[in-house]
Length: 132
Image 1 (cartoon, rainbow, N blue to C red):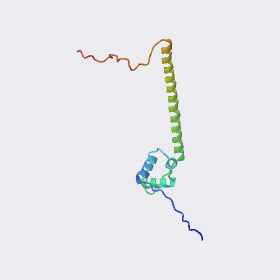
Image 2: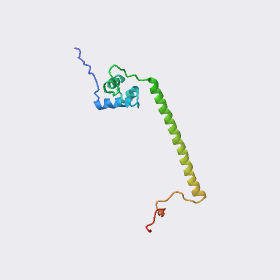
Image 3: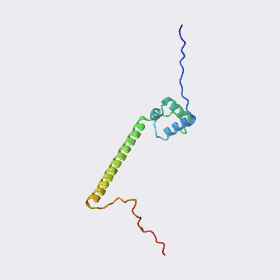
Image 4: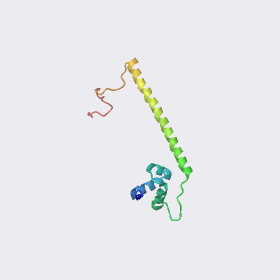
């Protein structure tokens, strides 16, 4: 006797708010359809269906076409921005290291304690006095 095996179809159901959020991210230009597919694990066919359904810019009779070059150039611009920011952070770290070394040198060679202690009394400052 042969056992009867039924294949159970697995399907995901996404909330309308999730669908609209993905469409909003795509329309804002933050992510491409392929990037959304990889980030959220949703098929690009499904995402395109949502774009046609919920898009603010989509009109009947028009197709949504995503230019691969625009996605690639956007990615390159973002990578360039990351490199710029990493360079700036590196320069700031070098400056911090230099200033910390200057503090150590001032303490050891000149006997000057640049770092304030928490027990140091507050100075009078340049504020107005109570006398007029």
